[in-house]
Amino acid sequence: MKVLRRKEGPSLDVRLAALTEAAELGAGRLPDEVVAAAREVAGRAGARRELSLEHTVVALAGATGSGKSSLYNALAGRQLADVGVTRPTTSTAQAALWDGDGAGPLLDWLEVPHRHPAGETGDLAGLVLLDLPDHDSIRLSHRLEVDRLVRQVDVLVWVVDPQKYADAALHERYLRPLAGHRDVTVVVLNQVDRLPPAAVDRCLDDLRRLLNGDGLTGVPVLAVSARTGQGLDDLRGLLAERVADRRSWSARLSADVTTAAGHLVTDPHAAGEPSATEREGAGKRPGGAERGLTEALCVAAGVPVIVEAVAKGHRHRAVVATGWPVTRWLRRFRPDPLRRLRIEAGRGKDVVGRTSVPAASGAQRARVETAIRDVGEAAADGLPGPWAVAVRQAARSRAGELTDAVDRVVATTSVGATRRPRWWRAVNVLQWLVFCALLAGALWLGVLFAMDYLRLPQPPLPTAGEVPWPTVLLLGGAVAGVLIALASRLAAWLGGRRRARRTAKALRTAIAQVGREQVLQPVEAELATYARFTEAVTVARG
Image (cartoon, rainbow, N blue to C red; front, side):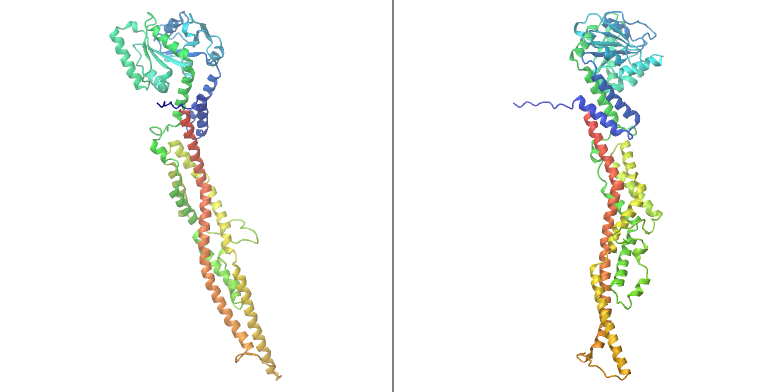
């Protein structure tokens, strides 16, 4: 038969490290008091683990008149605390020690100055029992002392009386916040000797009902009378079990870590932490919003204007480079579209300074801002409130750098559109050869005309068929030059369209990369931080 072993959770050391990491990751994003509380728990846990683990610190806490000090004396077997009826008599905590050797540093850390040896040790060896001031004392110092020690002791024994066990201050200020500390909490209904047995049962049932409402279902509830000794043996036995186990300190720290981690993932502006469905959909890359950002940046950067200028500029330069030498010089008087936009590389150098692409209009800038906001909203969808805010802020964190970054990438990417195709040089050489042939024919005919004018004998004249070669060179050069120029212009028009398409694609890719670097990467970094945070919180919660 196969035996199934229960999978153990992470150790306390691992959970403390995870809580510390979660607190560091949440700093600046979560409320300061929540982060500070998590750090305080981690620090307190580290300090407690360095102190005596052979002693279990149990605190008796209660309201004025609950008989807390009387119970303290009864358990200690000695008159250690002054007993009052209607006014608080305990001003500072005091400790009763059962075999207290080695407990000094622990009590120093707890700042408990009054220490007394208890009566017979028996099975309570290692117990450190504290009598705390009244939590409802009229003195603020008393209440602060209770609040401090309630956060530090290993086991809490809440002493209530039949008259004030339903006190709202006790339940709302102490018991309800300690709902995660069921394993280290005990509730004692004292002074039951004043009630008939039936009334005691009714009080216990009502008290358990209130505790269930506080989230403390299953917490031990004992009926005790410090005056008559009723129920004291049960309470001693319970304390003996906790002391013998020697694990109450770790159970307390474990509960503290769980509670602190739970507070880190609770959104103070919403009903609670995100649901499983929301967590599953949270932190996904905003693909549609990213495309919208790229489109908005392309329009604002003047990509359509640049693409049109690339096509026109290519045709303009092609005519200058490959046109008929007789007329191409006229093209130089027309402005170069790319040069007007300051998109032109020097020899071996990239564009220096800003381009002269028309600045984005107000509507275009608004569209970019909307696209950035859409990226933040899409990425923040499903995240808890503070993290959603952090993601939205991350999307806008580098928005001020977008304009210069896009302009730089437009300039450097568009420089490729100014490169001259190799065939231009070949056609240019051909045009000059044709032009030289035309000049040669013209000069040849000119010489023949001059010789005829001077009545000089005519040299032999070669012919191509019946047409003299000078005429062939002149007319052929002119016709060939015009035809080559027309063919080159057609090729330049087609090349300009191709180059415009390639430039548009390259600009879109480059601008999309800028959008990723300036907007998407900060968002993704924040989402990665949230993922690490949720993983750390999950480990911390065990």
